[in-house]
Length: 65
Image (cartoon, rainbow, N blue to C red):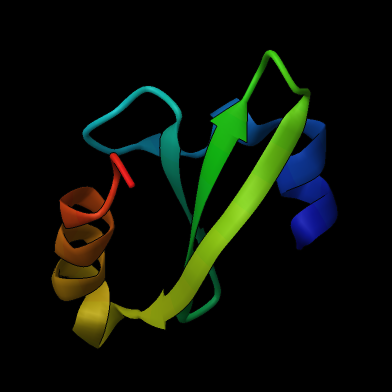
């Protein structure tokens, strides 16, 4: 699962910001940030469909921090 994200992080859905992405894996959603300049992917959180919008809103609220 995480190897697919590592190999091609841009094959996932973009959220509000270019580097904020979401990948659906079975019944879960993986939220992560892509840092091209560092060649790194930072997994932020994993949630279910039920909490999807709440999770996205929380990430966006704290994005600048």
